[in-house]
Length: 310
Image (cartoon, rainbow, N blue to C red; front, side, top):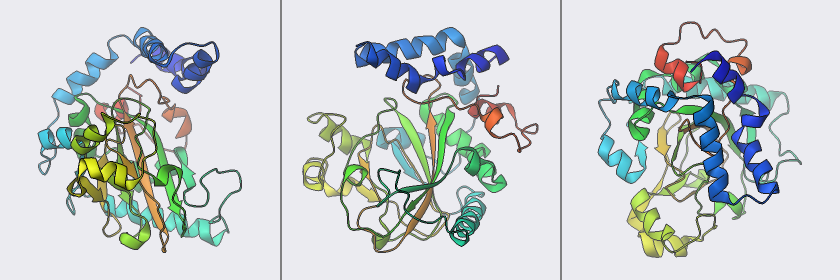
């Protein structure tokens, strides 16, 4: 991607979320809004998707990955020590969390709608500027894993460190739902503390079971457990649990999911959102401007592509 294209794609007029809002205000239907956003990206960066597909075709998926099963299920639980940099990233995020706690920052903010059960402690540059986290996010195996799913090198469109304090609620994202940024996306979830059934684990239904439910429900609906599991079957449900450093990868556009529900212990996790370059409802962060304190000169071409720098 040329420097001029990167510059234009990072302007407010080309931001997908802002475009969607502007087009909605003038009454443009959702499906047409998506086509306009995708068309704008193609116009500003011609050939970009082809370059990303070619780069993905040249990668070797991680040795532990069954790519076809991954694509079918829309999810993958990475085996222990499958991604060597995961434990160090998890540890660095625990250190960052304890610093926030020591500064009195571990509290429910009044301006966050989901603060009773889900609090963003750090986002985007504050997370990726941690060296161990950047190494994990741009590790060759994780880039190859996500690229094998999309058949193109994706973009990191968002990174968050989330805190789920103990709660007794069951609302909003604590109910089964799909995400709507694109028809397909990947959330890479790194457990920052140990998670068990009492820690409000991220819980999801595989894409096959979710597809059965989605065939008879609105994609934007919030659904209770019975409505989902009576159709998908309990065997399709997985909760992401394990020691700190455990990694799960889930297509949250294809897999119904919920989390942070009724936990008696706090939960900490990092979530990295990987989307296709042409995702119609995901922003294209200007990572070069956001990571001004980070040396990006040693990144390889695929890593630069993930950050929209190549």
